[in-house]
Length: 179
Image (tube, rainbow, N blue to C red; front, side, top):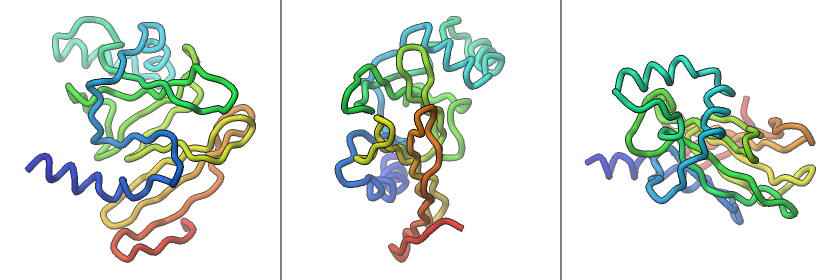
């Protein structure tokens, strides 16, 4: 039953991936084969999100060792045609810790070294084929019941900013601008 529920939740998200997208990740994705992050990066993420106190409480509550990297996994991503060294970081799929999730969204970060380039929380994340200022565009999907808000973000030379929002009605298949 859990597998069926996960499939039904993920199905609309699978249809959202843009053609040619180089990487995507969704809330329900398994991460067992992903790499654990380095300790300094785990510290940087916890500090970036200003959640050190919350994560420390989680560690204490579950009797875990004081090591933030146990919560985060990463995959190398191609975010630029010219440069490597970018990583997509997210909470591991197991064990599940609610501090890093919403109702069905998951927190995620794009990093280079210990620097957080982008921080988001959504149902699905994709790297798109278009680019701005040397970095590929990205897309966040926020889905509720029968509709998804697809937000395309472009790099402006300093950070990712919203460029476009499309509302997709999953029951009719129609799309239009967000309002």
